Image 1 (cartoon, rainbow, N blue to C red):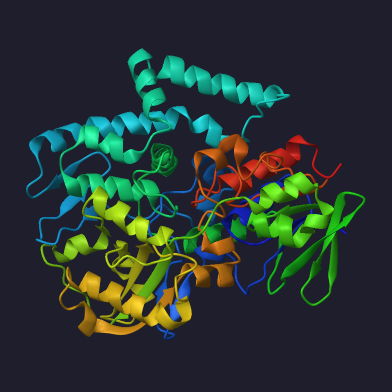
Image 2 (spheres, one colour):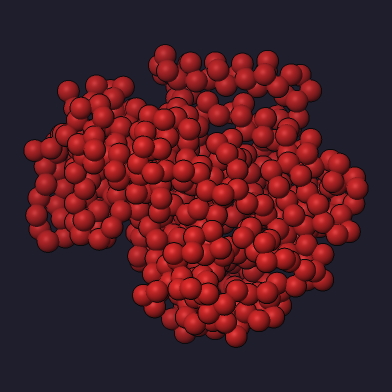
Amino acid sequence: MTDVLIIGAGHNGLVCAAYLARAGMDVLVLESSDSAGGMSAPRTISDDYRFPGLAHATYPVCKAIRKDLRLDRYGYVAGTPIDTIALDASGQHLVIGGNTVSGGELPESDAGAFPSFKSQYLEFARKIQPLFLNKPPRLKNMGSADLKTLTRLGWNIRMGLGKEAMYEFLRVAAINIYDVLDEEFQDDRLKGAIAADAVMGSAMGPRTPGTVLTWLQRLQGELNGPLSSQGGAQLVHALTQSAEDAGATIRFDARVEKILIDRGKAFGVELADGEMVKAKLIISNVDPRTTLSKMVGAPRLDTMFANRVTQIRGSGVVGKLNIALNGLPVFDGLSESQLGNRLLVAPSMRYVEHAFNHSKYGKCSEHPVLEVTLPSLHDRSLAPEGHHVMSLNIAYLPHALEGGWEEQKATVAYKVISQLGEYSPNLKSLIVDHEFLTPLDIESEFGAVQGHWHHGELSIHQSFMMRPLYGAAQYDTPVDRLFLCGAGSHPGGGLNGLPGRNAAKRVLELGGVK
């Protein structure tokens, strides 16, 4: 019998495994596929073209994790910093850096206002960072750790921000990004790009309440360093090496079907082939809805809790299009050196909102939001000499498309390519092959319920001490010796590794396997 069994070798599962193995526990990770990484694992098409996982533009991993797990020793480095280029149909593109913005026809007032606006919101993100670096505090029957987190948070907001900034933070924290940006800027391109960042990966539009909060959650990544085109493959490799060197074992092609429970206590799992694996603790990195409703099963849960699990909101709205190219595409108005940046098609907030509105009714917008990278410009090993790979995230695509995805998948991919061709006239002529993953495909391949990146919406009622739901918000579950460590747990998705780290700290806080 092993000490700790972790279900899923995604990056959060690997982080959790590495921490617990370094604490002296015997750790076994069971992964259903043939490689580690989950949604972060690289993909290959036509044998010669390799792509990053679903996240193709990332921020550096949490600094504490990088240090604690000695990831630099295992080859982890932050990628080359990139800007965001908001594409414009007339070629008047905006270049948005960490705290600068420039481009044709940009109002001087916007160029002047952006640095202070970005600095203020990064400071807001910094002041709420204690909520992200620790388990979410209970609001009832608080322990000393809960009180410490809340005290530090309150001090940061009241004393760290100052009176005026505190009032501004309290004013905007729960409202929508549309209204905030409309107050600050004139340029539609700038507002559209920021709004798209605030809602990417979520079933929300810029007018949805709480989208300032989702942008602050995204800015947590920027506190670790600038955006880069590096996907998650290098991070996954370093985490795997760190976990294994600490003594953890990773088994592949081991799909968990059932969590075994006796008298309210988890004691092992049953695999798809019928094998039973016993452990003193079980930690699940998979979607909490799958963990609790399927692997545990409603009959073994309190009726009210089981019902709350079914009400977790989170339907995926982002698809992934990988394109193999036999040359470098030309984009009107961009130099070749600029193509290595993140290219964004979100020309206004109304455009983003309109794309979202279609998805609410099971339809695809004729003009979706596109996030485009050319990873081969940073890593020539991804494609043959002279060839390139292009990666697109497409929002919003409904999980349950009216009429079904089977009949419309090829048509939607063609429309997206045609849309991007309006900015890159030679794109279609360069295409060798492509792969299109809809939210339905993401659900099928990665086990993310309804294909949601974050295993559940990052809405106000599903964040912090309510993530993923009341009764399972501090990585514990109602099942004794069963914990959660995936993106569905606090503080949510992204490649920061914090759910895995915080879950490991929670297990150690409770005494480990004693």
